[in-house]
Image 1 (cartoon, rainbow, N blue to C red):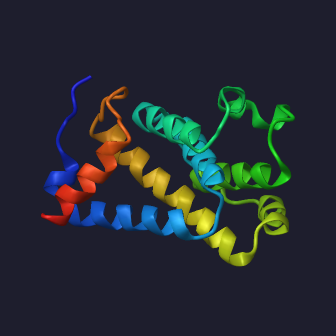
Image 2: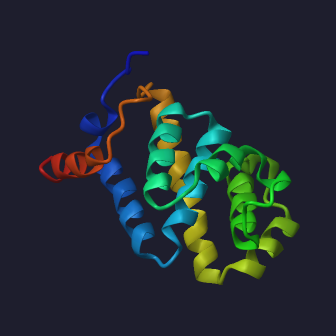
Length: 161
């Protein structure tokens, strides 16, 4: 699959904004492993191969296990996830499938596990991965090309733009 165009080079300012959200999320207090689960689950729902490759690598670097990554699509049927993770995954699914609405029961489950600020931050994590998924899918970013140092290089390039 050939990429369609270099969206980051052509429109760097919005990408800087997405990177800023990522930096915020890295320091907001949510567990990095939880944020990566959100990114992987959102990418699964959206079918973003590049982002799945990227965030499964990043999840592993935060200590995520193969077993949990393999079972993530069936998280409801496994004993591998905590109540907090389950609430985050249900919230991510509702935010990603926004046309179906966000059920009150999913909100109440999330509120039982997260403070209001944490829930706002969790929502930003879901919103951000959905934005990245839409860019990568639309412009056909090839899976298998991600290397962790790519992010720092892209941020440095955008800083000079």
